[in-house]
Length: 409
Image 1 (tube, helix red, strand yellow):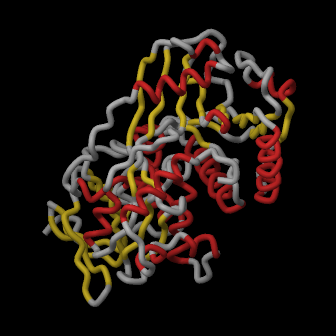
Image 2 (tube, one colour):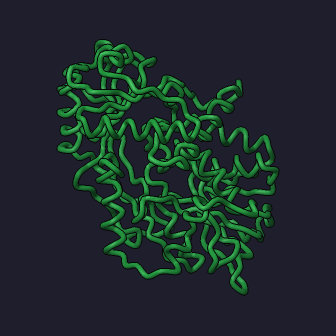
């Protein structure tokens, strides 16, 4: 029997999502929580791969408000002098190069205003002052959001960890989950390599291994890891860390200044995914080899607006397996098939930036007597109570990735 043999809630996975959920639970007064992590430290897998941008401009009011909650939390954590998330509220610009994209920006502006997020629609000439090194000659319009920003993923999880421990959450690192015990359709314990933990609730926040943890409870969920890449460069003329983050949907690119260098990433038109059934819970996710063709495509496209990107020496390639779902929505909430088994996964590349907002959605799904229609729409039941097949699910999840910046997406 382990020394931590009982807890009301056990969270599996100490990445940004697991820690964001633990933080939200503790803030709501629920501190009888154990957070389990197989690695020796927090945020070592999917979170470590993140590019660190946090954008609040989304296509629905619910998603805007979710991102706004994350920004509120990063601000709050940044005020902690002991361990801060390295949050920099530098703002962001979303660039339109054509008339249809200008209309899209107008629509997004309306959505943001309904959600209570202040944004401004500017023409190319006005927007040039935000990113002086960029060629705005072909830019038709820009949506400016002053409260967007960027953070350091490792600092975010360190800040969450610090605050969670201070509020009484117990973190057990270097502890692998081996099983989930259910009786009469309800979770009663989690099995680990160090012993059993009796509990009332298990929250699956295991990232690329979320599928495997759900299988321990008898659930089959289409949570698909899809490759994503970005790169950093040496210092380039005109760049400094105070520049806003940028997104250029028509070029499927995003980025920011990282120090005096460039961090540039994008979405692939022909995505690469892996079947989570091809590796086990006790195995690492397959290695991701940098794809020179994909990275060169990012560089070439951005070079149209920022010629200095062409041929810039790369200092780092970030890559990993963020998880996507067939319908592009998170998987959040308790299963009706296995009471006490709760999902917080399938984040569709919003794990770090959405961590605090998703944490609050989990709290709402569990403890609000009347959760919103949006929260109910994220239930894992949508995949366990309706038929689906793996080939179709994987193809659709890839499509969500490939069309991330598509008009109307």
